Length: 117
Image (tube, rainbow, N blue to C red; front, side, top):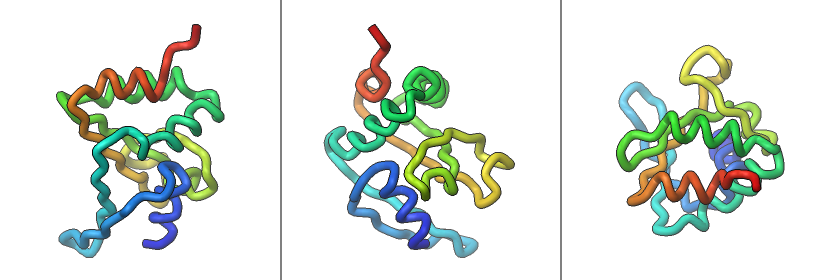
């Protein structure tokens, strides 16, 4: 689990992650924050890797009411980069499944992936 935690922290920064054991022996890492400051590193990576437009498309497609759900390649995240992937087959070790709940998810997506001027 420590490699997965490291991969998550490489993408989102230092978070107060809580590990919950799931049925079947898998683990779930969760955190609760009240502001978007916990997404600053993710936003910076989107900009640095020049994938804001692609990320915007993925985030908007994954929007369901107040939740944004997407998958990241675990191996790529472990080395500090971003690669969105499908839930199965694209990442041999399985993806990092991310769910973000927000009162205003469209505004959050606009902040994470501002349109180029």
